[in-house]
Image (cartoon, rainbow, N blue to C red):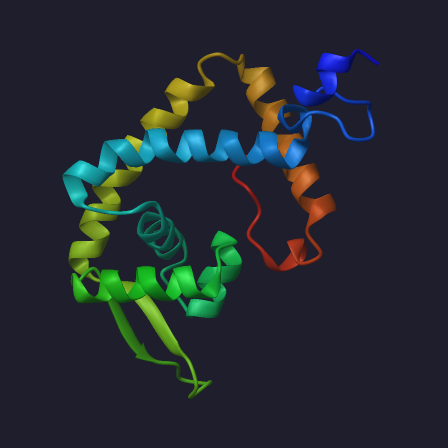
Length: 166
């Protein structure tokens, strides 16, 4: 082994480089994509990534509990709680008692929340299209399928979570 390599983070295959570690690659790619898209709606609508994720899920499902939102977004319950409080204070989300489970509430977008969702979603889709422009349609489909397979392999709760869009 070259003496200078260990100080630079170059090691044997067992320790490897962080840049070659799948969770790191997925995390930084996810953060880069989310930041790119968030930059397009943050200034205009004043939404943080966590708030937009909650709105995006509610835009898809109509209404959900905070627990369901945490599962669907794969976000920490505290982050979902904060995002919901901000959205509720801004009048973008309503909270009503759950008809079956009295301990929880059903959350849904207000008319204003739906309007913002309707404006942000096309911006997000356009950003996604720009990012995917480096891949052919076949590569895009393959990439999505591979991501789904990795997700299913890594997640014991995969059956409870929504499938990724194909």
